[in-house]
Amino acid sequence: MRDVRISYLIEHPEYIPQLAQWLFDHWGSILGEQTPDARIEKLKAHLSRDKLPIAWVAHADGQLLGTAALRVHDLEGREDLTPWLGGVFVGSRFRRQGIGAALCTAVEDAARSRAIKTLYLFTLDLQTWYSRLGWTVLAPCIWHEHAGDIMFKRLKAA
Image (tube, rainbow, N blue to C red; front, side):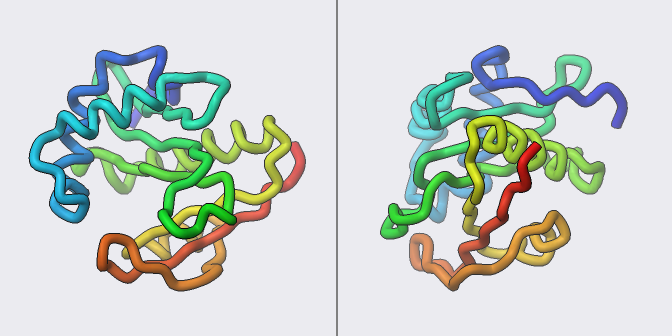
């Protein structure tokens, strides 16, 4: 895909309804959400450039492609680990084009610029994909009764 840009969500709040729908469709049943409204409120909490949580969006030619976030915590019960790469999602039509990797890199770069040395994430089923991006499994985890893994990545200084 050409001309993909990664921007702060705060610069493109017009994408919030579409993001909320995508995230609700993907994770809403696991979270027990009834409508995308709760997801909209969570996304609004990510409207920042400086204070966590911060969200980014990938977009091209006015089309939303995906999102990712930098959060203080992302997995209940593991508040000892911080900060987290979370909410990584690419619209189904835009996958396998490097957009997810670009979003992860943007979050990693933002973390590095804040002198963060280690990032964490959890995933239910994308361990192999994250491993290709340099992430390492730390421990198994349970998220809303679903088994997954906590992963980490040591960030090299810029």
